[in-house]
Amino acid sequence: MIVNRGGALAKSYFISYLRLIMNARDCSVVDAQEVAMDIFFHGDKTRFGTATFEQFTAAFHELSH
Image 1 (cartoon, rainbow, N blue to C red):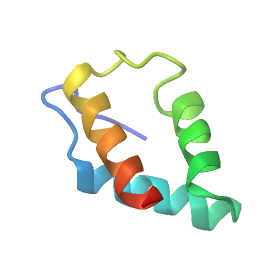
Image 2 (image 1 turned 60 degrees about the vertical axis):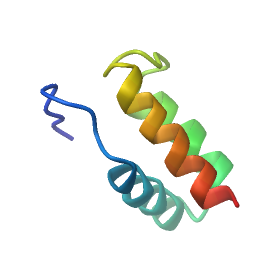
Image 3 (image 1 turned 90 degrees about the horizontal axis):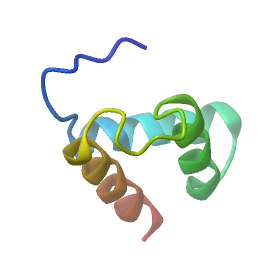
């Protein structure tokens, strides 16, 4: 996946991304979050900046409630 480093990614992007992982792997949102942390962020929350990680966290919370 190519990510433009020009700005923060939106919560809606991460909702779609997490749903894609959940559907493709038939897993829970918690498992999808772990996969995204490994594959997308490579274990580094600051890889794409704090604003992007905050949007990721917001998407996770929306899907988990």
